[in-house]
Length: 190
Ligand code: 5GP
Image 1 (cartoon, rainbow, N blue to C red):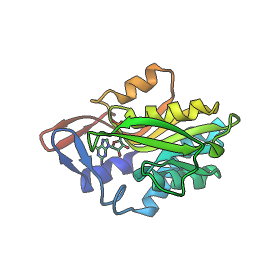
Image 2 (image 1 turned 135 degrees about the vertical axis):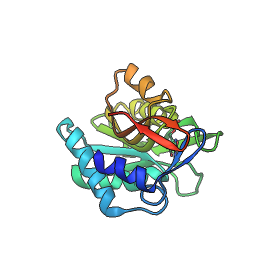
Image 3 (image 1 turned 120 degrees about the vertical axis):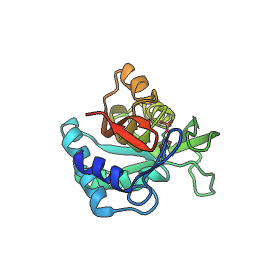
Image 4 (image 1 turned 90 degrees about the vertical axis):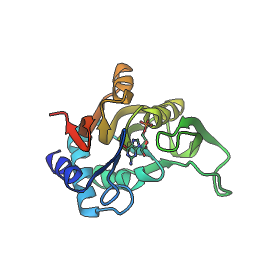
């Protein structure tokens, strides 16, 4: 997605060695008109897949998931990372290793929000080592629902998450793929 690449080049910054900051439009301050374009792009890619639900993870995935869901006309379910008294007791849960915090956390989805008849599109902001996306795949599959694909805004292909998911036969579509970081520059895959 050309407009996304331009936005990353203009507004993004790099935290060496391998973290990209895009918090002026994607995951802190949010450019909602641009997110709508991102949502439309996911619909162009996965619109033929009979998606019934979008699954993502808090916090950064929520806005993106909602932007996509508006185009698909389906609900969004986000995995919760934080304990709270409101959470159902009957949940699917997985342990995920956090790329940005370098610690493990437990992500949960209430069982009543996933059904074996669902065809799920998993959405997230970044794909690095694939821990978050793989955890969501495991949770969705444990409900009996089908994972129709994984939609990522920014994949860093110099980390192995994309390959791990694709090796499992999962369709992964990323709107921008960063092949490498060279000093203070991101190099995109064509
Ligand atoms: P993974 O689980 O694939 O290793 O990492 C993906 C998760 O870590 C995403 O949910 C995202 O929030 C975070 N993440 C990974 N790499 C980056 C990055 O370069 N920048 C930002 N802002 N978040 C990242």
